[in-house]
Length: 136
View 1 (spheres, rainbow, N blue to C red):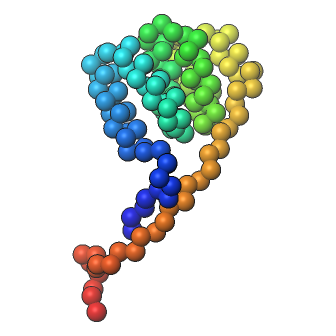
View 2: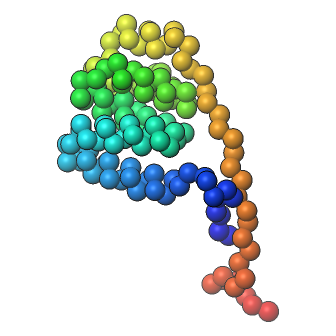
View 3: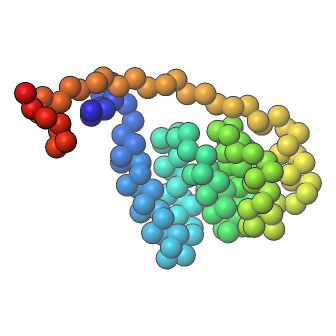
């Protein structure tokens, strides 16, 4: 069974993931400034519900000494399901985000879960037998 988006104007997440792989290469090569810039543009454009991407962006902001932006992205990650206790266990966040900052994050009522409507995909019927399927 093959699934394809129903609407032509649906966001192409294959393209999103390809660009994310390029950003991972930048991170691997310790090009953190470019990685932050490109990842921020990517999440702003696509607005994905991938919590980890917002957490990675928050960490890149901290590496690049941009704590206020990092806190914004941490809040966004929490909207998509990241738990405060789990975030506090990430070493970089634990070192760079103060106790006072964590309290502000916790009390600013930023933990409103974002729910995106479920996408529906048409089912495509295969007209040829699968390898393990007997033909009659």
